[in-house]
Length: 468
Image (cartoon, rainbow, N blue to C red):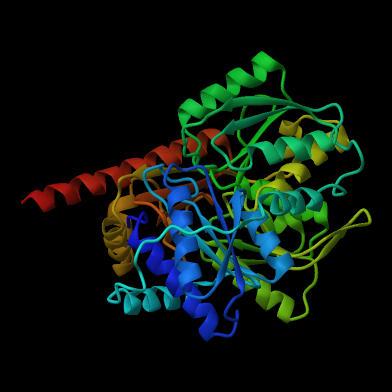
């Protein structure tokens, strides 16, 4: 959906109306607006501010900042907020993330917002495009986020580490440098870009992997860190340039904080339960599902509750205390906590990041995606597989004997020998994602190649049928 223009005004208006109708905000209440570095983001943010003001709210401009920084500032002020970002998807697309005064809206809220927008769409006066403005709170919001992490590690806890910060067009690029330098790390900014570059922390491209290997060797780096476009998903590569899996970053964060309860999607590594030694609940893919599981856990009296996704975004469902420092709940994806926890683990034990990875003994997990794979085609594939066992056997019989199938989110196949092949459509792009697990890297790479080959063959068959 093209957000520039009336669509942005429509959804901002619907959001204000929803807040007012539910009593989550009173007329004249402030609403925070943040944005990423996409070319369209400033215009969309201005349109949203105009619509919010017209709906009786007071927009506050938080500028370009990470999504978790905006969410944290909203929690501090008890204010709703919206973040203009398309996350990791290409620059020609964009989106809006909505937050109530208590945090990220859930799936039911998303559906209610969509229904309300559909009802308002016929009223041209409500959705006319007028650019607005708001008081500039960008410095305060950014400072509050940086202060959160000042005491997370011992003073100069990262001293001795040479860390490259892959800046690209991440909205967190300068904040990351400030935080890591305050912890004693020696920082090298790398590859800053004024043009927007979509970085998917869950599916690192071959070209990016090649650059990482060159950079760590050329600059003698202990690690390279970065985030996706809006700074809510972390990226960490070790001293060889090899990226660390996001679910491993989440597991390291859970151990660092002494978590007692973990909520994580079914796509996260199947070894999380054994490696963490604490209660783990599996959810569907998406932060709203993880947050819902955390809220339920806290409601049942669970303490030290954390959630994370396979993309590395870490969410805190409860308050934590680390070395005497308080870390308040932040139930939205954050990239800084897992980066600090992982680098801190290497610095404390004086070992390379590759050794930190080896300590956790997780199955080898890999993932990839097929781009330009329509959602309708993905759904047709899943329906075909769920229809009967012979459909699964027909498509994947050459890959291995299927011993179990889980349809919580997409189709997750357990193959003979414990290997796992999981396919599901992306929630925010026309892509089909493929996740695999195996006992060693070679087997995992072979399984991923086999899975992608099957999925591509299916797409080719469907394309031929469409042309008939």
